[in-house]
Amino acid sequence: MVFDDRSPIYLQIAEQIKNDIVTGALAEDEQVMSTNQYAAFYRINPATAAKGFAQLVDEGVLYKKRGIGMFVSPNARLLLRTGRQDSFFADVVDPMIREAKAIGVPLKDVVQHIRTYGEA
Amino acid sequence: MTTSTLEDTALSVRTENLSVRFGGVPALDRLDLRLAPGKIHGLLGRNGSGKSTLAATLAGFRRPDEGRVLLGSGDIGAAHEPYENAVATSRVCLIRESGDLVGAAPVRRAIDLAASLRPYWDSELAGNLMDRFEIPLNKKVQKLSRGKKSALGVVLGLASRAPLTIFDESYLGMDVPSRTLFYDALLADYAEVPRTIVLSTHLVSEVSAMLEEVVILDNGRLVTQAPVDTLRGRGASIVGPAAAVDEFTSGFTVLAQERLGGTKSTTVLGDLDPALVTRATAAGLEIGPVGLQELFVHLTAPTGVRA
Image (cartoon, rainbow over all chains, first blue to last red):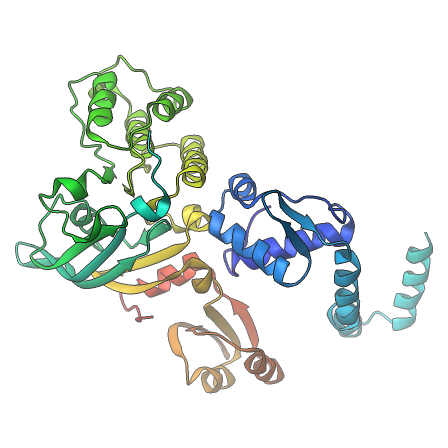
């Protein structure tokens, strides 16, 4: 993963881990890398990695086992999916509709495509 | 081998009204600075901004013309001035690109000398790094290529495990694979033995992810000091019809502006809260983030604005 220099890296780390949980790449109750492993692997400051992880603990996405490490919370996937569902139409569908209107793609074609693609 | 903890040994740095002049011309101009112990600090500035003079003064290589440098830690207490002070300077390791090494001596001797001078020296780490950088032990220092000489400096800096370790552009002579090896070795050893590290560089984008704090110098003065993640996202570019952009940016510190016909792009400093972003979008303006490298360029431009 290449970090974007234009936003705080700890937020990008948190987003990446959330993504891995939503897609199932990280399972619930699975142990995540230690902050030092994470820092070494992505060549970033360990304090930055720790800040990203701490944010996820605050949000209830990860939990700590003292002396062992950090794990994905049992309900993390549901929590994250619900959060993303709330903003799905505003973040994903509405911009698509705006783009379709701007370039003259009829909405009935869009609906047709969604049906075909979704059932394929 | 040391059993000291980070709280005991990592050095904190304070400069008070620090000025250093060369023939009356200030290289450092009344600098007030604090570096927290145990962090990796980036010392950023253009060529001639005073980075090397600051590094040399922190390491006790130079006496301040005015003001002072104070180094402190749990085990030596606060308020040590490094100049001609063995207690403080044995704990500070400055690696410069020139290497400060005796050219006629074999590499092995340079290593032995460092080992005898450095109280926290780790010879196992030194041997391991010499292998990884493929530096020949029996060659004379002056016979090494520029890249190998830089690598030798980096090995001495890492293996000294000094409570304050300063790399002053010391890795510029190394090629990309060697620099990558240096970054990996630095992070791995820092994770094992946290200490205060200063990386002085103008290659901002290459090192920025490894830093926790940055100090930006320009013309011997402090432009800004902040946690690096605070600076990321601190600038914003506003693009749109010139009149609307000017109205929106009137309350901000403007770093740069460009015009193309009726469209204007203005780079500002400051946090844009969601309400402001909504207002800008409603006014037909586009708001984009500004990267750390770009922010650095604006802050140290000849007509730069103070943060």
